[in-house]
Length: 192
Image (cartoon, rainbow, N blue to C red; front, side):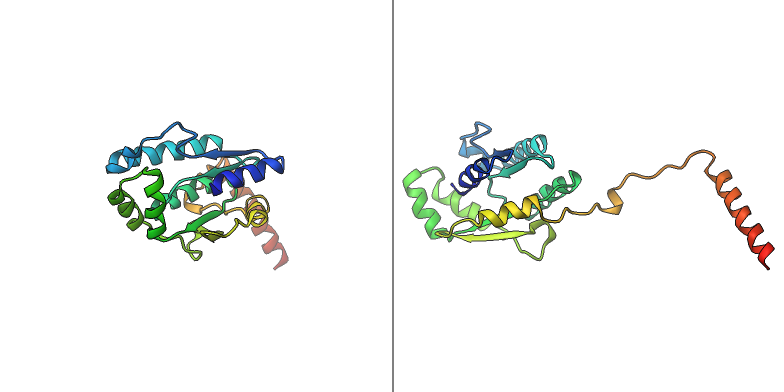
């Protein structure tokens, strides 16, 4: 619901926005969460769709549980590779509310919902992959303007040196370097 509201807000601002979630991919099967491999495949599909849409002129909203810290880190690295910005929105809801709400929709079994809830590794603003973090409680409104500012004006992550491509040198680099050093040495000797 919040992701859809954010998506509509961005469209009203006439921005290029995409909403990526299970529904937009046509996935309505709760069985994805019943074993590790199918859930991993679901995460891979979502990440792939985000990667296809991602660039600095579009705002991509990934509406997913993202309860695994490592998956959020993968998404952070994806954003970093595109040299664009991110914002994490965490809806904090207690398990009793989730169970009560699920009784109406009956989407998840109670055991599966409790299991999913127990796996949640809460985002922390001190972790770079969870920054900037917008923690929203159940009846709060999203800070739409702040989120828009974060993804449009916030600082872009800097590249990690270890992932930068190796700079190759021209084949005559050493000869050119030797010439420059020779000129510098001659000048030093001349000044002495």
